[in-house]
Length: 68
Image (tube, rainbow, N blue to C red; front, side):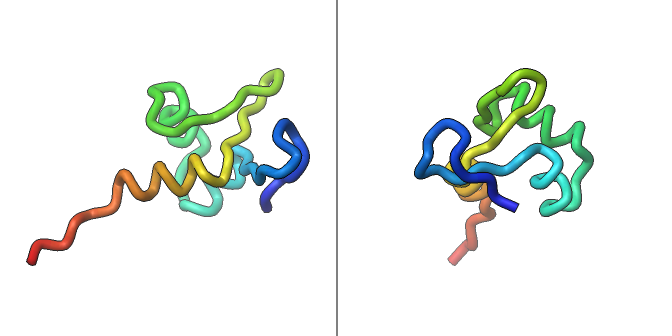
């Protein structure tokens, strides 16, 4: 579920746990993506939030290209 109103009141955010469930990956995998800079996140205390646009960019960068 997207969270609204954390930092940018007009932005939507995912938690690490939400992304892991959505993508059927381990939470540690999502954290690795964040730690290595592959997925941009914002840290609030001991939790990360990932902006919806960052998720879309992450997916777009990994899209396979169809050969013509």
